[in-house]
Length: 422
Image (cartoon, rainbow, N blue to C red; front, side):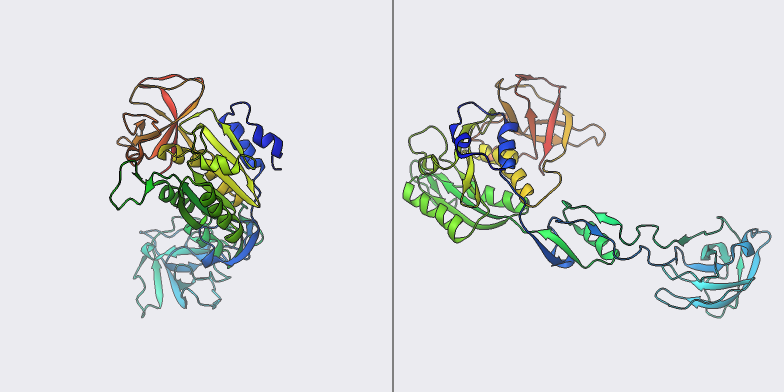
């Protein structure tokens, strides 16, 4: 359920990261499902389990190029006492033939071809003399290294028709798509992609490629957020950069919510305690502006405008990236019905010392040393730690070190929680 307007806007006490995320997820419902052809569904999230339409394999088939035989005919075959069998048929892959085999007879068979009903084993060609010469009318079996059923893939040994191939919440990648196709499925039910709109605010922002006047800075948050949205499975329907003017921001928000029907609107900047906080000025009576016990990213905003989830993130680039990881990404995954919503956490030894502000959960952009595959380690990506303004240093990061609120010092060798993001 969604938080009540009153509880959403009081913001009297500082929230923990977990509390703020809990409120967000309580107000986030999975989007409707649609049925797509499998080829168009890669990258989407299953809205319903996929069940095999056929047995896999569909029929008993050969695991080797060789000869289909009665096992009892070759059970005692060996180099010193080979067994000679008469070749009575050929069974290539894709053939529907089912030749009868009497005692002392064999059928040449290729990998994947259906096993003759009368056969009880396959002898690999390498366990024979003479190989597959077309003129051969008999084969000399020189070994029988396995028992009855040798080198036969049994019908349904991978999965039976009607069995679950993948549960709802699974992201369809290449391996999953291939598994569905192999089980006879060509259409799947998936969640609609979230429609995301990004609004970067700040009169100081200017396009990155031009000359900058005094007080201007290159704008990077809109590119950061739109890329992160796409990586989380969203369709980005709008990317805007606006000044700290209430009317301009209000028009941009209305365009995203009313005209583009965005499911999610993500703003950067304008949520702190300063004088020119345009997001807070326009939305203070509509969504929740709170302090979250985290570093960076303490000022946060969240609520609903129409049917859209609206996230108000701080303006500094590291704060934007961390806030997206902590709050926006899980919500985008929840809209898609994903399971799970969080990245796996690693525990790695730190190779640097630093201090953190006790009472806040710290997210430190980090680099992981994978030099020794059996002994990974981690260190901050920059000497500035989690400084919210270190936009270029953020580009060196491939993970976040997550330090709990009650910890104030990290020493070399301490095990720390690490979220890999690349």
